[in-house]
Length: 117
Picture 1 (cartoon, rainbow, N blue to C red):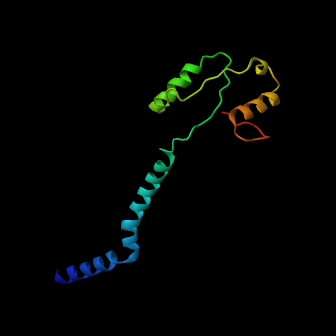
Picture 2: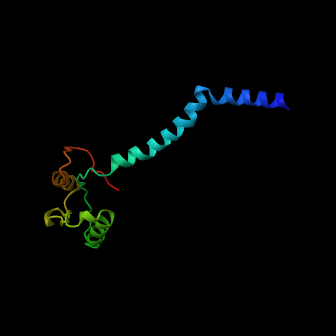
Picture 3: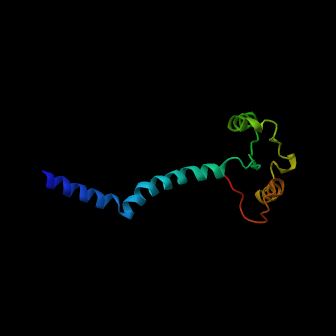
């Protein structure tokens, strides 16, 4: 029985002291933690403004958008602006409306489609 314990101890020490085992033991949990923490830290706390447009001819969604913005960030109350589309653009051709929206949103695009959901 003594020989079995000596062999088992030798194999255990040989396995545990390898660089690959130590890397896996320490490196993988560290990598998982970094992969979870770094994106979360990068995506919050910058305080930059987000501009988006919703085309809603009924006006039904204005209060819902305001409630959603406040629910996501209580500091957002009073920091958003809900405006109606100018009447001249309500029935304008898509290219004229897109040009207005690009200028209003200030995204700097001179051509191409607007992002839509």
